[in-house]
Image (tube, rainbow, N blue to C red):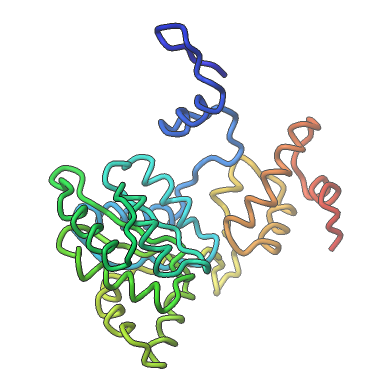
Length: 275
């Protein structure tokens, strides 16, 4: 857990863990390894294409389909000129502009107009010849009307110099539809700028309507969950990858600690789920 410098100084465990994470080295055993789901593959491809081709658009996928996880992996492999902002319900215009300033290493300004001007100047001076420049707004379904209008304003100032992508759930689309129907100022213009390059991820649930065969989560079960009863149970309990992970990882760890196979019976005993 320690690494020494040439001069004998020792890197702390915290620093070592951060360094290992930055280069993709697993410090501890990972019981939830990366799986190349169709959503992961499609999101990676879309982010790569956007960064290379100066695209503005959206990636839409259901909650727990791995959008943020995929962005984490993409940003780790492509740290140069990849800017990410995670939106929350607490974000307002000032907060968004401050986050952009921080991400671009620009000094925050007193006025919002001055912030936008500084952001614009910085983006226009970034060398994009080798690595491009990609700005990603994650959890975009949380964006309010003022925040969306601010993203539009940012777009208007820098669209010729970088790619801009929004990652969100279908709620983002329904929110934009509602805002458009209410004739909110700036929303139709925002939709006009981003809608054409929207990409919709496949549904997580994979059940054949003709045969009834359910292959949902199959890539996560292979080599991990061999008990058919437990597979069926998890498919009934979970509607997305995050939920599956939250159920399955503790169960895997407890089964390994007990030295037993992970079965439906064992899972029910440790979770207390009867039905």
